[in-house]
Image (cartoon, rainbow, N blue to C red; front, top):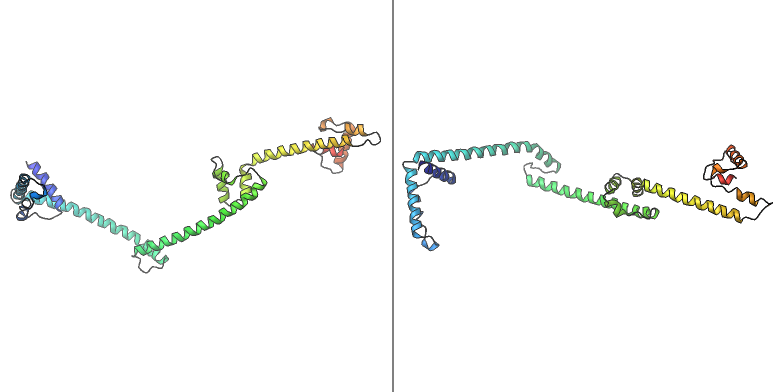
Length: 268
């Protein structure tokens, strides 16, 4: 029984938060409960008897135990409260220099007016965010204008795709944010594709020029019986040049001409 009594004492002591139980008042608990509230009169009598028994115990045989339990619970709560107060005070002392600096920054006379400091800081943040957003919008509009110019030069360019594709989108955005213009960023990322396309275009162009030159020579009227010689001089490979043709190439080089595999035919 002592164990149950001690548990009950501890429970009541903690819930009371330091308020002593007066036996004269506690005896009225059960009698104040009306059967109109749906509580059985027998249950009310039982509860009244328990309350009366408990009051007799804490006022008599177990008075000392009750007082000790109550004082122990209060002591624990007081220690916890004091520790929290000390921590709060220490934290406040640490923040005081910061609040003083912020108050001076925002021209607030009272450094302890935390609400005013927070309000001023939030207003500044909103202004800064608005300025940043406006600056970015201007930069973005500039990128869109550059994108139109880039598309004229590279019809396959798509700004939205380049900005968001998984493979190179991050690199493209990083180049733009670092100050690189849209066309340069695009050519840096796709330099191999662009170079390959340019080489293919140059090859096709050179091949077409050779075909046009051959056609022009074949269609040129014969002069002094040399048309057969001229047509035979149309060669696509420098290694197939005749000795007389090689002399012409050497003569061109000695004059300072820049002769290559692409332009040697014009010196023949």
